[in-house]
Image: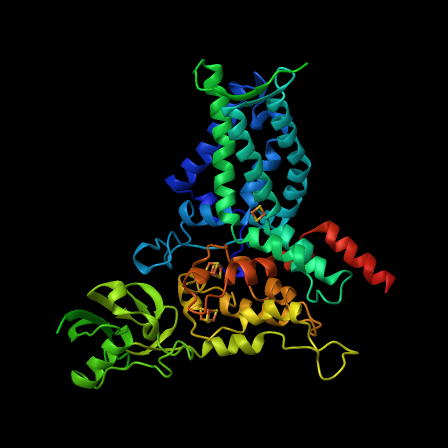
Length: 237
Length: 246
Ligand code: SF4
Ligand code: SF4
Ligand code: FES
């Protein structure tokens, strides 16, 4: 707990509980499954996990692992520091060692912004995939899967742009808006971002659910499930 | 009249080695708050019951306690909202004085250790602050120093580290985001204040009776500022270059 006892790997990882182990197991299992059973594309649907390259997956993975929302999630439900706020369900106690985000390993959390920059570079591919799915066959086609992808793209975009590091970057770190160039515009952008930031937790979880949903949807189509009805279609010339 | 069962933690550390929950039956009327019930016991059943309160309007922060295990203000918690089996205990993160009263004075030492307001040089008097710049630190000034956030925070409560605690990150942020202040307290918070111990689990924000968005608006921004100073090589380089230019 004190500087003298500071370790490199936090107690939870050097002496993990079944919760920590199952968390790590799930992450690894998902990664292995993605590698062993790839579905890069099916009938104009590009799977988000393979766009543009499965090798880039560690960037969004690290984005989420270092994201404040997911930090809260695993610190509570995996590490149980504390599991809940009320006395009865905290599952934290004095006998447990605690280093929080002070160990060299956990200090990686401070580099969250770099995973944000990396993810911003990948973000356009979501829009490209959406475009590809909407123009499948040469004209314009709106299928159930594309609707799922529209929601997914919107959520991923809002999730990423509402990030706390971006909030700091565009104004949070400044003490005086009126001292900057174009103060009103700067403050306006900051306020708008802050609004979405206050929903960051919801956006984080919803966007994750939708990315997985799109992946599962495409896998279901590949397996021959007849769920992809067409709503609207303009035939290409 | 309807009666509720009210368990109150009783212990006089100078006499009892261990505390216990004593059950009282208190008649309640509509609109009564937990503090009313506790005072009913003090006035009618046992005048030796120690409880601290002042404003009864959620302004002074004195009546902080744990009600059914959740840190709350006794004067702001309505009985009809939490049922008729209620337990009130003192804040566990602080040393007990007696019954529901704890000693929160260690927090004042933390307050004194924070770098104070340092007005910028060349600032004109009186300070004139634009409205757009007041907002952020204004939110933090709603703090009533009830210390409930310090009580609920596991870093203080279960691990007793060198962390200054959520209340003082709020204080630091209110000074840091003041346009006339010249310091960056994230340096102090990272090096001495133990901000790295906070794992953004947001219990403080969930229970703050002044509805300050502690984690989102104070702690995370201070963590990001500390990252600028100590962890982000690009930012550190930019800062250095800027300094060379000045
Ligand atoms: S920040 Fe909120 S919970 Fe903490 S002392 Fe101030 S009013 Fe109380
Ligand atoms: S968010 Fe940080 S300061 Fe607030 S209760 Fe959790 S660990 Fe403590
Ligand atoms: S804080 Fe969640 S993405 Fe940055």
